Length: 136
Length: 136
Length: 136
Image (cartoon, rainbow over all chains, first blue to last red; front, top):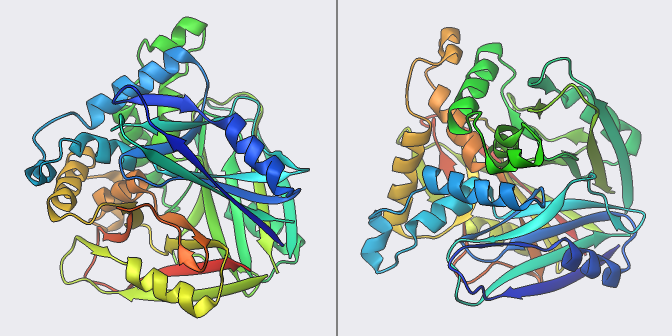
């Protein structure tokens, strides 16, 4: 059994950004030499998500607007700590912070339209994603 | 370490259907010969989910109605592409597209009421789910 | 390849409680002897979640209030079965019932603020969480 670990670093210009990372995950898999197994892609922060969906600009904007409706900016209790990111925490919970991609024949075993995204909800600071592959 | 991969195919009659798949996942596990490890069950499409919850007809109808409220049909930006499935993409994001079931003593290590479901939100076309088991 | 399995038991005093479990997961990992791999933490019930976010009392209260708004108590179809927990099932679906934590150098490879939580939505009864570690 082999394992491989890599960290991706992000520092977005905007407070919120959705960034495609399928290529980076595929590159990590290539370096691992794993042919069959699983690769976990997981945000290391609590105001960012990793998800799989469609690389289509209109939809990405729809997702942002929809999340804004479900987890609006407001004066959350959390903000008594001095933070202003209550909404970003809730968006992380809806979207989930991780995905696990099956690996078959040395490739990400994704469907035809599936792309992996990093969704930043409280950016303009350093954040990381951990990639962990296991398999044979 | 062993691995095993299988694909389930779906083509639902309705646009939306929720289909129990615990038996198919258990069968795949049996074929794998794995006694201890994990089995990933992951939709390969971006308008379908895989989730674990209760096999109870009333609840399944409640889930559908509730999702309709959280991600209603409307004229999403995505629909400028000619698609009419913006709502189905958002339902996929709420429900998450995958689960990973622990495997112990050669069996799905589920709680007493846990059942695995495929939730189709944009059906009447060919879709797939990938099952990937790893373990010993 | 090694595997390790442990079950955590809960019986909350309140109907809803959110309980930090990072320490218990770390202890299970220590017992596994695994240095590199993954550890799955998964609720075995359909009215409880396992999630990763911030250990901050105000935010935990915010999460509960927010979930109450997204999945309010009401007379769901499911309640024709005699159950009164329709809302708890829907909260489980939003929050997801499981997380998988990467393991590096024998430790939970979490970001600086990431903590693991058990979220009970229909307590005052016996519930379990399964922990399954795999790796080398």
